[in-house]
Length: 390
Image 1 (tube, rainbow, N blue to C red):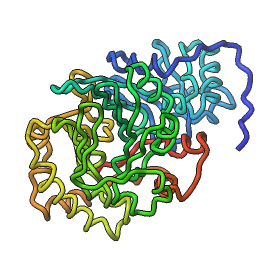
Image 2: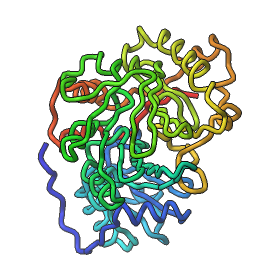
Image 3: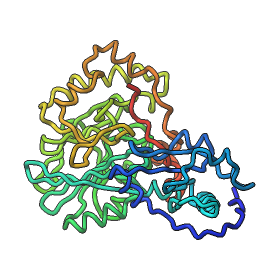
Image 4: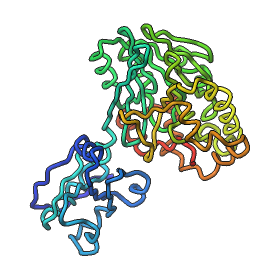
């Protein structure tokens, strides 16, 4: 698709970086956004926040100039940040509005720029192991770096941020020894192979995940329930937790932190339909119930849960991390208090749309399809939608 030709505007509008916009949102500042993408794209995915007001007017509505009904909801007395997919149409609309007297800026690189935003927070376990939790605000993806005694392991890395993990490990004085996925992801392109190749680390997959048809098993180490890996003086224990997928696996760090992948989230549980579709969803939901009650919830209540995703309404801890104790989750999540039949019914009821391009993403992560870096980045834009409706 060719880039549309936009009329010239007189104003020279300064861009707003994704980082500065995120800081304003995190600080609780009042933020008004004008999203100029098509309504369908906007409804699928847009920037949200407790103090964020977002107005959707597609850019093509402005091609004939500003009409009163187009700007009826746009405040004239406060700053407005205009966004779009890649930053071109939003720059045009911001300039047009600035010519008309509005205080505008445009989000640099649009929603693609927002999707490149990647943050982290560090916590330290009582054993001295450093846990760096990475978060991608645009999609809610979480990844982890475990560092102990000069060694590091990265769990659920995103391909788009391989260089970030390399740089961070070097800054922490650690060599990446293991790169692990908890399962075959359906919402983003894994950086498992790329990060392992870049650092010389061992790529690790659960054997049950590899059994789904992974084409590169000769290049990975497979692990099974009960296996352990040493990361410096830290211990990473493998716990099979199927339900979201047949190969879903939790990695326990020093018996204090359970990296649960997509099994258990801070405010929900896994959806069960991304591997076998609707036909296999009930059986997977029943398996998920058993996993939760016979495996995860039998761990000590003080065990911290570190999921692979957070949602738009998920509240972080005061330190900014998306972590919670099993004991707290047992009290807070109604789903965990239901019997098997009610649990399965609730999980299967009103599930959100499946992640965008999930079939192509799964095929890429299995190694059955190839994608360039740009294709991979574009493929995974949007929300993760890996949790069940609650």
